[in-house]
Image (cartoon, rainbow, N blue to C red):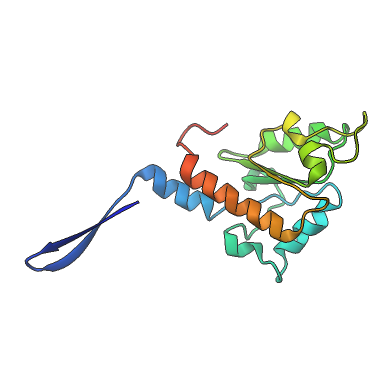
Length: 164
């Protein structure tokens, strides 16, 4: 946003110049609604981030929704088994645009220590991932940091109508 200070005979007034895209992105970055969805150990850390000690609501992600139709942020927390893969994909497909994905933990990011036939080796094989959170399990502070990174990405790089 650009701020121009102009002075006239009647006094001082401010002019604020911006684009519709910047205003929309500002609103989107501070109103993400994550879906209540946990797969393994990382889900406990995700729940802790919503509790009073870490308070995820300070970052604009206050309401964890129970339905993909009401959520725009999918936090995949934990390992994704091959049996669970179609469910993750379907939940992502049911979310309305714009939508974002955070892969929380080593298992969601790269399969973790489970290098076998039963575990998907990274959720990015199923859905597009916007931010990866390393750790086994990552602390709630790491998830909050990932949300701030996603907010920066939304503000700087989102184009209206170009979301996947």
